[in-house]
Every structure is written in structure tokens, then in C-alpha cells.
Image (cartoon, rainbow, N blue to C red; front, side, top):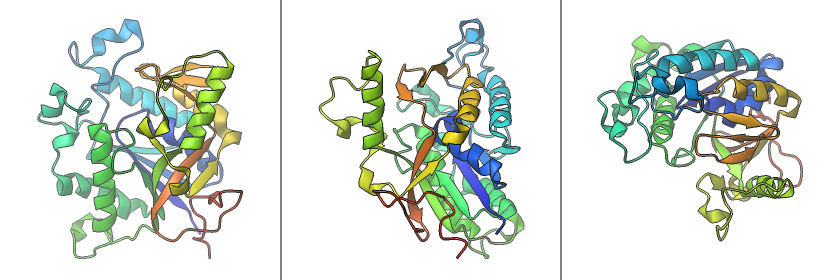
Length: 295
């Protein structure tokens, strides 16, 4: 089987943080990997002081700069097919929930769902992926663009399979398996423990339990763990290719909110559409996003 994987993300750098090791592993295995990014990340904070003038409230040129960062990150991972939804700049970064950026005329958060999904349908019908990866319904942690990327991706899967919907966008295609990124609570706890062992403060110190961590999900809803540890170096290089957004420090990385997490070579997912393949290990998790599709 000619295996094909499509990932739908909100901003440049999201793909590397959540799926970098997975992407590098599958490229190495000969899988066709396509990345569809929905915005340029114009509203991101800037961690490089000498580039501060690129910010949205100054020159407003960060989006164009981040296209170059994404290109370098994809080169590190070996991904050659990466695109922007509707073309670069079609939709703008909406900023965090409740900020004025939400009201920008091109804010992705305000995009007509079927119009945005049509751009994704065209990609699905062209690439014909067996597997699609995106966020859960909360976008992982509630960012408007992550939530909208989830909505667009799920709507595109539905519409792409309907031969009566926009045949001008290509021949209908049924995605066999859809996964949402998932961070098991046990893995988050391991990261907290690792930071503590190094004498580092955790951003979660003081929380009663991990139920209050927005992106941490119960282990029992996780279905799949993709071991990309052999490609962790590529993920590290890809993260370093996003310097305006990510600071990498040894086995940890910090985002603009100084959130430290262990840089993981094993990435986790939740199967929400399609048939679950055979599992392994104590949790019985799949070890391959394509598990069961060769049968």
C-alpha cells in the first residue's frame, strides 16, 4: 500500500511540537507526508529581541518570516509537501481567545466553515491520504485557530467523501482513519517529574491535579503511541528552526509562555474515525497510525 498521511495544523511550529518525530519517522519509511497549515502565525509572540519589530503591532511582518521558519523545519524533518490553507495569507492568525485579533477581517476564527473546508477538501482529494491528523474539539488548549483547524479538518473529511459535493474539487475520497493529537496525563506527569529531578520549576506546580491541565487527557482515551525516538534529533532541529516561537534547552523546550515540556520522541494520538488496529504494550495502544490498513 502506498501510505499517505495528511496533517492539519493552525500555525507554523504546531506541527513540529506535536508531530515532528512522527513526521520524520514516516518520511524515513517512505510514507507521503503532507502538512496543511491554516495561518501564518502573524500574532505570535517573538522570542528573538532583534526581530521584535516584526510583531503584529509594529511592522506586522512576522507571518512572512515564519514561512521561512516552516520551510527550514520541514527540511529538517524531510517533508517536501507543505502548504497553506487556501494559499499563504488567505487566513490570518486570530490571536488568543478574547483578544482584539479575533475581530480581524481575515481572522481564521471567523472564516466561513464550508468555504475554508473547501480548500482542505481540494487537498484531501488530491493527496488521497489514508490517515489524517489534527486537534481535538478544544484545539488542545482552547486557541481559536486550533479549534477552527479541528472544525475545518473534520468538515473536510466529511465533505471530501461525498461525490455530490463540489466535484470541481476532484474525485471523492474517504479518509480511512482520523486521529486527534493527545497528551496522556501519565506522560505529562513524567515530564513534571523529569523537570523536578533537574531542579526545574514546573508550570503546573501548585495545581491540585492534572485535570486542570487543558491539553492533558486521560490515558484511557489514548489509542496510539508512535515511536519516533530514532528521529528525535530531526525533531530537535525542526524546533530550532522556529526560533521566534520556541527556545530549546537540552531535553526541554520553552514556548512563548515559558511552558517547559520534555521533548518527546514518542507522540500520542486518539483515533476518532476508522477501525482501530492491533495494539501492543501494557496499554494495548497501536504503534502505527496505519495499523490495520494493510489487512
